[in-house]
Amino acid sequence: MSPASAAFALFVMALSLARIVLGIWLMAAPLPLRDGARLRVPCALLGLFITYLVLFVATLVPLAERSGLGFSLAQLATFSLLLAACVGAILAVYDTSVWTALFCCSAGYTVQNLASGATEFIWTLSGGGSPGDASFYTPTRFAISFACMVVVYALTYLLVTRHLRREGLERIEDRRMLVMFAVTILVIIGFDLVIKWLVEQGIAIGAMVLLRIFHGLACVFTLAMEFELLVNRRVEAERDTLALMVAEHERQYEQARESVAAINARVHDIRHGIARLASDEGLGRETIRELVRSVSVYDSQVRTGNEALDTALTEQRLRFERAGVALPCVADGSALAFMAPADTYALFSTVLDAMLEAGPTSASLVVRRALGTTSVHLECTGATLTDTSLRTAREIVARYQGSLTTLERDGSFHVNALFAV
Image 1 (cartoon, helix red, strand yellow):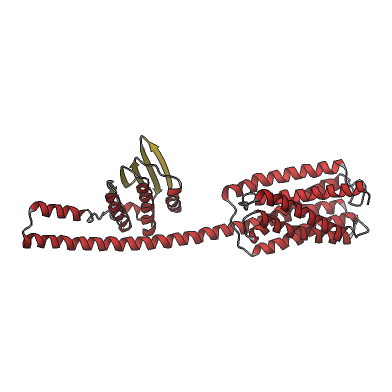
Image 2: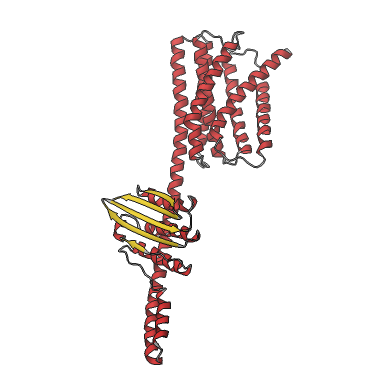
């Protein structure tokens, strides 16, 4: 091989690897980078190119002909092993699991193969030659390849990458991704190479068109299956998280309910004790009044007609009282009968906790039902709540198809939740 031919072969290999890497990046872009990514990225790219070069020399160079079934099988081995190397590169650059890396590589390579299949489809229809022909590598073919890549990759970015950036790419722990990886090798890569081999054997144009259409559909179907696994995994993760949250809310609610009941019982006993002291020791009225006032701080049970809301407000009133902040409440507890007790407790506890931590000078709460809706209004003065502090409340409200909004006006911060009942 002459130096010019060797340089051209390296150029073609670099372009082929760049298309594969770009397709995989479209899937891996939302993943967090590992420390030292500035060094890891060029090292990973260099490693992939060296791997590709070694595989090319080991499997393709020894072949006398650049076409035929043997060449197609050698290509299948080369690209399958290169795809496996890409998984290692993803793990080296991104902080993720091996199953997520398998998803990114198999989905990314499928996108690349979809663009490659479109290129072959248009090239063959235009009367282009096979890899063994001198006319195969021409400016026209490169232009077709570039146009197909731009269209397919742009659509992938708009429809997939932006969605993954917005929703996030979970750390997948699904061994079925290994099956999809094998499907990518056998169905996507293998089917593409079979079509190329059949074209070399002189298959009819009509048959080639049908095969390329089926190949494109196979690529789309494979991508859909991989994303179905991804969505199912996200749903399972959200369901597990929700179950943990509900269990934790129920535990906190039960603990708070028992604590409030114990405090009320103890306050009741103390009141009787004060009455006995007043009669036995002859305490003055002012002394008795001061003792009763001190005890009344803890005898602040709220009764709204909803036990979970009563527990949350009683508990929070004690905390607000200790902080020197009044918490007046006007609440129709029956308006929240559609909510699970643990969710009712968690909703009000988390919002009032956030308000108290923000250091308000005053706070208030209103719960009412009117015109087929239940509205919840919490307001505090001198404090501002962050979106992070209201995340749990938003999740609870969304679970009941409600809406939660916030408003800051005239030094007051408002939290409003609305439910259709």
